Length: 165
Image 1 (cartoon, rainbow, N blue to C red):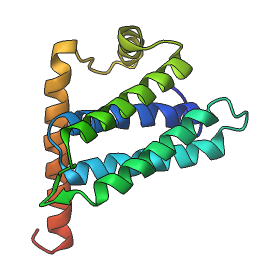
Image 2: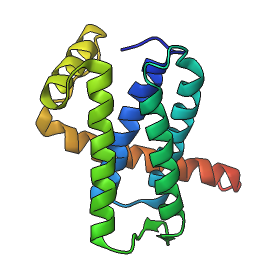
Image 3: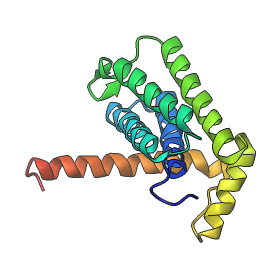
């Protein structure tokens, strides 16, 4: 866990959104959520570039920004009735691979590791902060619950905007 206002913190936030984006691409292709995660990745990357005074992480921040821009160009034209309908499964598989590869590269640069080792380090950090830690089996369930809460918050926000609440 890194301090706010650092490139490292922004990269952590990018990793979180890459994970959620990958889940949305692989499962529920909610257009609003995908757009939100791509825009969030782009925003953290853009801000991170201004915070990376030593250029230590610049290549990863630029790669994150570029990936978000590229995927936004694809996704914006593919949203129908709230769902992201990419032309082919081959395209979506390629997009998932791009997200996964970038996430692994950032993990390696940030933590010096990938995969299960990085997950164990993150779990340890969370335990140190006295937060609930997910088991590997609960991760998918947690992501699904988080998605449902996220959608509910967005629906509530939209309802407030339109005076329905």
